[in-house]
Amino acid sequence: MPFTENEILDGYTCPVCGFTMGATPSDFNICPSCGTEFGNDDCDWTIEQLRQAWIDTGAQWWSQNQAAPDGWNSVEQLLRVIPISISAPLESNTVIEYRFFEIAPGSGNWGLWRSTGSEVEPCPV
Image (cartoon, rainbow, N blue to C red; front, side, top):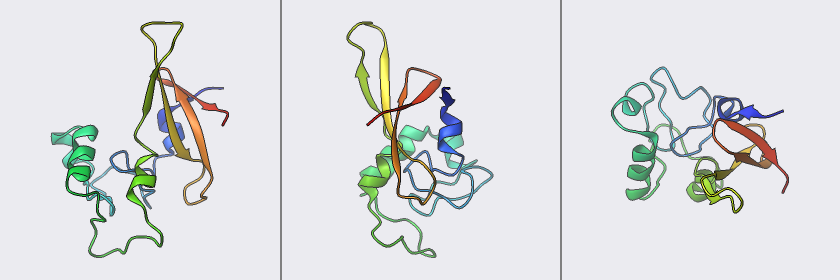
């Protein structure tokens, strides 16, 4: 059964940088990784603009109050939210996106998901 993207994200993955937060990215929660304040920053800029701004400034750990997790890697983290788009060869107008998602926050187990719009489904790897 296909899942919606929101169900896959499980509400705890920062859509800007991919960090698994301790609370949902809403209600003025601030991501300690990229510094995005949800309900404020995302009202003025798109997720893509916020992500690009974080990358352009070096994709460094933002919080001065919370240390980065051991082994923290911004590139690995970004793979959770940056789609890899591929045009389907048989249908000229179809774009299929593949994204890596952590199956359960903090589990270290990764899955690949395929999206053809609002429907998202697991993809065998």
